[in-house]
Amino acid sequence: MKLSIVDLGNVAPGTTEKEALADSLETARNADARGFHRIWFAEHHLNAGGASHHPELLVAAAAMRTDRIRLGSGGVLLNHYSPFKVAEMFKQLEALAPGRVDLGIGRATAGPIIDLALQRDRQHRIQADHAQQVLETLAWLYEDFPQEHPFAGHRLLRSVPEVPQTWLLGSSPNGSQLAAAVGIGYTFAAFINPAGAAGALRAYRENFQPRGHGLETPRAILAVNVTVADTDDEAQHLVNSAKGFYARLGKAGRGAGAVTVPHPDEAAKEMTVTENDEPTSIVNGRWPRFVAGGPGTVRVTLEQMLADSHADELMVQDLIAEPDARRHNHALLAEAFGL
Image (cartoon, rainbow, N blue to C red; front, side, top):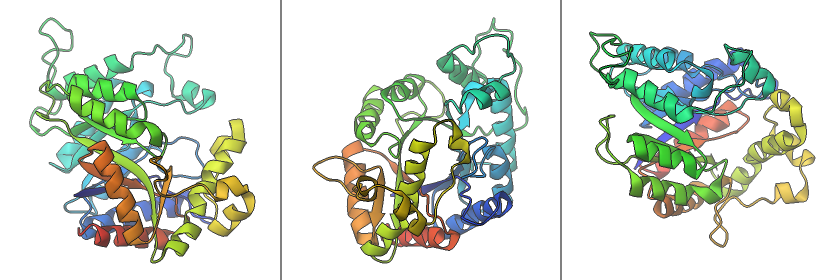
């Protein structure tokens, strides 16, 4: 079973973004040594809780510090950028680390201020053309423009035959339909929409069509927020940071960018009883937003989620406040799944 990580550049309480970025690179090095299959870096802007704003920079830096692990974006917010820029950038990363680069692409609003700041043309509303942007990105990577297209014949990095693996990230059925239609990998963020994960991943697999974009058969990743500790009780304490972070987001409104990941004791004091008691395992068939427990407890839950969704790979996110506890979490996961 392939096990991977998506890293947010968590800023631990009382630390700085500089320390968080250094910790992300150490996490990549540690994951490489422990046998994780890939590590992706998030794209979040003006976000005090996470320092991973431009995943391509962390991919390049991590490539110089690792030997085997795949490196990628989780994911590039394509709605803000030129498909040419994204395709060329990740083709160059592929040249730096041949056979190890993933282009994970998605879309999201980062709030009206950030959306406007990232927008080149500020005189007109952004058009909702995500599917067209995905197709153009793939056409650049796979030299797949129609002969009469003005971009046809213009090749990226002509002497580099390798192409990064391309994945579409989503948390709704729409993403699974697009990924299946264009024939690329699909990753579902179950920590955003746990109820929709299994159905979306099954639909992706059922509707997949190979289109010459690197895959002949479907390839699906289930992304889950996971907190593992030596005991169930300790894990339930640590997961308060994840619960508390989302509770803060829900109350912050337009000030969400200032929200940080709390220490678990601090989070426990801030949350309501309902927030504190949110389940961390499958209850009556309902998937949790956060999976937590000792290694055995967590493995049982994750294996059930993989069976329900038919995913090929598990990608873990965490919001554990302390870097040492986060890496211990990864070590316990690697041991539990026999990496």
